[in-house]
Structures are given as structure tokens and as C-alpha cells.
Length: 195
Image (cartoon, rainbow, N blue to C red):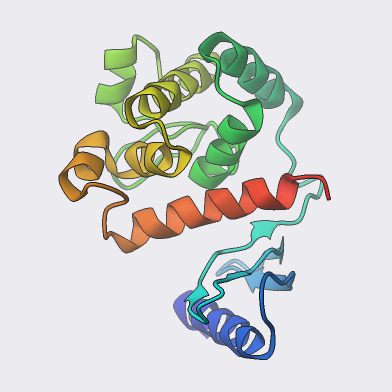
């Protein structure tokens, strides 16, 4: 089974679950990668009161393999404090962007834990290949978007699609990737909230 087929199977199972439940539900989903690696995801799955399903990729359950390295956590907390951005928000963005991998490189050339494009990193005065600089730049850029838009959802959309796209559409752009990105980070933040 191709990875895309497996993902659609998981989504179909989530949709069946949504038909049987109301409100928010928790789920455990296993994703098997092309290399055979298994990732466990834990809820929440989010469903609207109107009956429309919001497909949210659940946040991975915390395991030693998915926990951020201590140096990354320390640098996120330092940069978050410097830029007055909640550390848990920067951490959620780092997870979504790279799974805390400083060697990550996107098809578009974004680099590191915070997946900074070289131009953005240059504008921010940081070296995107340096762990400290990458996290510092990501926290600074996220802080800029929070100040610019005054809304976490819009700031996340701007981090993913760029502030011009958010301005052009007057909200979260109608890009599937950006909409899924915002939902996934919000779900991770919701899952991290103490009951």
C-alpha cells in the first residue's frame, strides 16, 4: 500500500469515528512510513457542532523518539522569552515544521528546526544552518506575525504561507497545506493543555 493510500485509509477510519461521536474525541492512530517506521499519533480529533468534520492530523504521542532534544527545548525557551512568544507555541511550530530536526531541508529550501527559508533568515540576521540561529529566527518571525495579525491562527498561516497570502485572502489562505498546518498546530496545543 502506498503511503498516500495508507493516509487515506486512516482518514476514512477517522471519518467513520466522527459519524459515531459528537464533540471532541481522542484517538490513537498508527502511521506506517515507506521505510516501515511506525509513528503513534494520539488525539484530539476535532469535530464541529455543525456536523462538519475538521480533519486534523493528530499530534504524535510523546515518546523518547518524538520528544524534543533538551538543547532544542532550552533554545526554544530562551528565544521565546526574548521575543515574548509562548514557548509551547514555538515548540508546536518546531514539531510541525521539522519534528525538531535541525538537518531538515524542505523541497523549497527551508532549513532546520524552524524551517527558515534562506531569504527570511537573512532578513532576520540569522544563520539558518546554526541550531541557535535557526530557533532564534523562527521565534522572531513568529513574534512578527503575532504582532502583525494579532491572532494565533493568522500568525501560523503567515508562518506557513507568508504574510502577503494572509493579507490577500483576509484570513487563512484557501491552501490545503496551510489549513492543515494551522489545524495540526492548534490540535497539538490543545492536546498539551492540562485537563
